[in-house]
Amino acid sequence: MGIGSSRKSAATFINILFFVLLRTLNGKIASISSVPQGSNPLLYQPGIDHIVLLDQDTFSDTVFEPGRGHSFVVEFYADWCGHCRAFAPSFKQFAALTKRWSNVVKVGAVNCADSFNSQICRSNGVAYFPMLKYFSRKSKGVNDGMIFESAHSGTGLRDILANKVLNEYKQNSYEDWPNLNPLQVDAQTTFEDLWDTLDQSSNFLLIIFEKKVDSPAVIHSILDLWPNKHQIGVRRASSNSPLVSMLGKEHGGSAKGTKVCIVVLLLKENQKT
Image 1: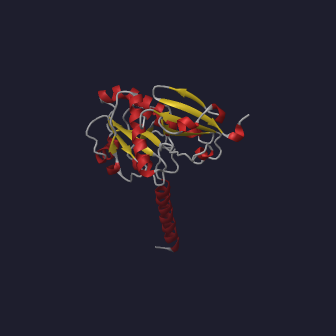
Image 2: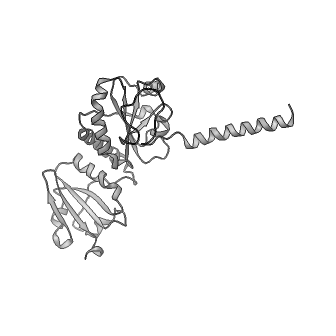
Image 3: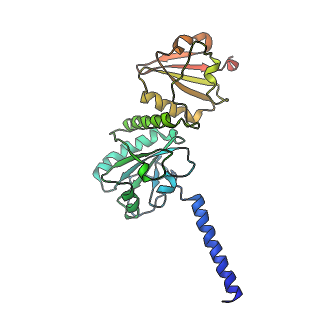
């Protein structure tokens, strides 16, 4: 072999090594607009249904992406399955209702009827359709997924997901997730203290006094407003909290009550006009 051939072989090897390294570093991360590989028809439309459509190549890199800040709930379905087709409108509604939670949890789906996805569906132990699994942000493989109880409406699925997210937060207290713990106060607590756990740029604090402990409606309200954390901070508290007696119009608060909760909005002292 001549010097020219050796150099050409070395260059080819370096190119291959660079390609493998680049793929390892970047992975194949799917997004809302990604079109999955495979030949079967899909029950969901890329870029329209707020669902990350996964396939054999993108599942692990996307769901178990190192350093991710979010969890995942994934539906494993078959496009020929009558139950899946009947369930699809509810799952679409669920994805739309939770689209503002994407920094905390994302919604995905895999078509197991497509032979291209056979291995990933087997690895996930898919035994029926549709099957839903919840992967916490600490999940490192398919065995870390938990069965996600199904519901027959988008709102029902949203309530189940709110409970999953709350339970994960209670165990880990992620600093880059919204603070889902109830506000705790005592006789020495001041109104200024209430702002300490919020983004410094927030001018508003919304306190939701829940009448039912760990109310899903309250949790998903906090998650809905999380994208606006630089403008408004949201916390929850028990309806029996001493905060109830602390609040009044002289402190810039306004309240509105419902059967579920009482909502109080506070304005920073230096923002009052």
